[in-house]
Length: 315
View 1 (cartoon, rainbow, N blue to C red):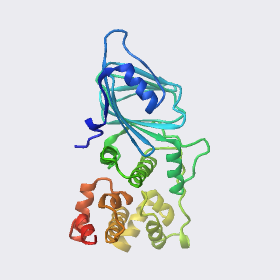
View 2 (cartoon, rainbow, N blue to C red; view 1 turned 45 degrees about the vertical axis):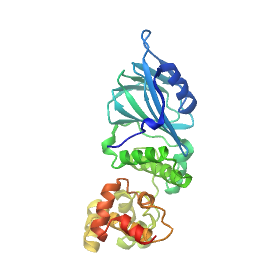
View 3 (cartoon, helix red, strand yellow; view 1 turned 90 degrees about the horizontal axis):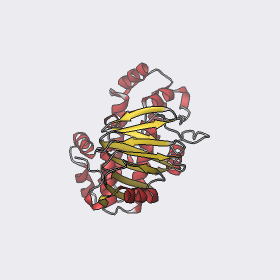
View 4 (spheres, rainbow, N blue to C red; view 1 turned 180 degrees about the horizontal axis):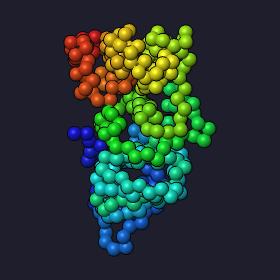
């Protein structure tokens, strides 16, 4: 089971809701809350800072309306764990349930109403983190800034994202070294840009010799540390999706995704044999393997041993 902040990160438990709100204003984002006129709801909050990210788990214990003019310099990624949330932004109303994701852009006005049984997990991301990730991927940074579409997303649709958040929470609670924190936050930013619809224009490097398999192979080799999409490979090869699959079947007997996955595994295998490899987890994350259990099994099938065995043998 994925744990998103344990009791070790608890700041308030069964506390006054306005005390929790004050803490949120200091650490997570400026806002105002409106509670029912009667009763004394028991609110709770857990919080960790991790590199430039803030990780927060909140429940107010009563129906609450949260409003803010705009978040300005940060993005809020909210995951509903229990209960429901009604969002009213720019005249568009949506209702989110457990396991769904709400992403708030820096210039979005905030008007959210949470049910009494609602508990949410929030990641606060600075604007510069997303912009740096966009530039590092060689994508075009939009002039007005990166803006994510107001689309509904279930956490289950974002393959490997929940295990990634679980790893981040674990590392945050165990005082991970700064270089590890930096690695994780870059992966989060890259994943959000790759998985969620936005106004970012993905620029594909020019293909050598007018396309073909060799151009695609070179592109893959140069971008193994990134999320490589079928659309990018189609653009490099200058073929349709159907022709792309046929091209890979003729050349390597694999689908494009399976070939990319194989090359990533081979790179991990090579990295783990170097004395500079700090840990299996760090190397796996470098190549986009978010679910470490599935990664270990795929690695074992490919190389006949677990990645930890390769790593330990070369220490």
